[in-house]
Length: 386
Image (cartoon, rainbow, N blue to C red; front, side):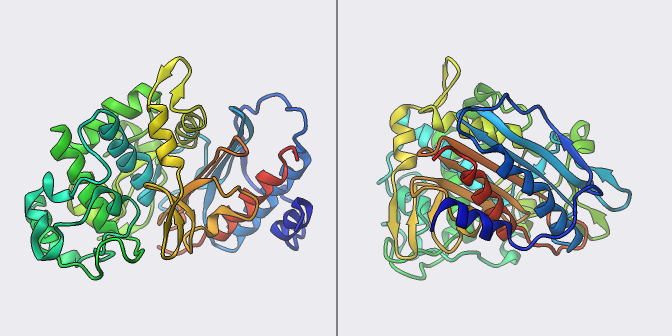
């Protein structure tokens, strides 16, 4: 189908205007030749309709093309309860599983380029206890592509004691399928990768990521366990034990581990994630500064066929998890979503970075955004030059 046809499908049947929607707009760069900016004008109405349907309280959408902002808007509310607050473009969100590629996988790639690790190293080389119950052949590559054979999640009760016991229980887990045989998206696998970063680097995951990645890249609003001074800019998720989670990780396993884990726990903003995407599109560079080696970026962008479709080393490309990708991003695009309502796609073929951030769980633990994000991604790509 043509771009225009897919655009019309993405827009769907829309009625009414978006005058009642609270919209905050960040600076958008001057027009770029060939970009059909009028196609982006339908995005506010799509978001408004989703807000009215109760799918989300608000969102931040950033569309970046060739290093320039085509669209950067905040919609609706950052918080509804106990008091309402408007959404702003600098709102920080609990990224949930976006932690996996942006932080943990990238840290693994940094360690590989530093010569401290290889993709085909058995995990047990660094964590000998992990070899229990048939896991001695599981490699770093297996974990990055979710083909390790590990369970998606082990029992939450395994995390009720201190972190050392939680990882001891992970080390004792058996494989569900032989390593390398079957794709099964696994939080446990990325928990192990986070542990691996710490074992190999000699630093905690949050400190290594801050020193080696976020600070050099200028991602100053990206961190685990954000401090109280940032609380007013953080989108809350839902009530837990009578407390509205705001600046406290929603994922119960990451929470039990103190807020820092390889699978979840990171907080960030749309602008910071766009900076990360730009770095990937510029072969690992941010301005004059090199963040990742070009070989690392090439490795990140290399498709890894799995039983359920195509992944890359830490990212999604085309699987059942790709509903937030839309219909017009290229086969080279890498992306990921997070349970809380966060989405990032980076398309090197189209020089496009797409960021959609929402806190869909606020305030009642419900909400749904993947299809909305996918439709907006389709609109973004449809606006680009043919």
